[in-house]
Image (cartoon, rainbow, N blue to C red; front, side, top):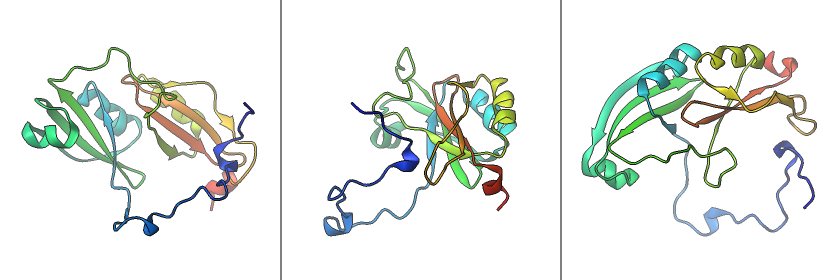
Length: 176
């Protein structure tokens, strides 16, 4: 199988795009938030608030039939915190009363998702978040070509297995 270039160079395959408006009576309007299941809400808040500088929006708890029907976590209770960072809403969820896998999923496992955040100093960020138990999966690499050429990127995995991709565009892009 030939190696594929960076996502920035990806092009749609002719004839492969099906427009939903042709087949559905609804429209996706926007993304509302991204959620991360965490082992410890307190530790997750320490990372997001103190490590990255997010703002706490609210906290709460829920459970019962509502939680079971929405998430499939029947019989569970969940502690929740909503934080805001870079105009993104992030939901942190500490589930209690459910079985958890013994090993977290890997960024290359089917169904795995990640959040990508743009930063102005990827090296300083990596040094800071390491103190919160987040580990870079290698060294930041520049995208070689395409619309994001020169942008340095790295996946970072947290203590619970959550993955964030950090991206540092070339300084000329950041100064705009």
